Image 1 (cartoon, rainbow, N blue to C red):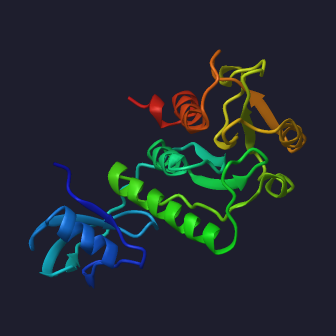
Image 2: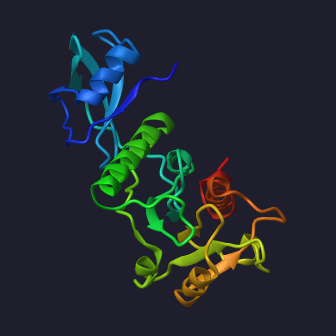
Length: 246
């Protein structure tokens, strides 16, 4: 069994004696049933990690002693931002979880014309906070020490109005596109735009093209929204990322 790993939002420091955050302590005590003396790993999302040992447990509260900081990373050299139209149900949770495992550098949820779910105000803020927690949990599971940010939801057309950073390759999937990923020159910074159920509206695709997005296809089949982005991420990691290693 792999050593338990936990994300702590507050900054950590070598040799510190800390009380674990409530959600972490609850998971460690109630779910994993860890005992005092158990060796664990803690990270604060700022890079690197800390070996630690549970020193005391009191009901749902847990305390740990940290060791020395370790410069351990498994980040991909390929910086991919997933611009994902908001999906219905638990599809968004699934997409974010798996995208983090696949090495995504950040997630931008956007409200597109074909999005089934409409989120705004406090409800939107709560969903984004939840998705950020999904990303952190995925990092705990897959060994990443840097938690990819999930930005606030905004309308796709507003996001497209902002220019991309220099050197960014902008891609969107389309089953009718003539070029594939293999036709493109390698890049190390990518923005990947994925539509919701029903794909992107034609006017949104036109706006994306005007913003510098290139349409590419992934084979002859039409992929669901929860499949498309993940398949593209995996393919990009094979072509230009860390799936090539070994």
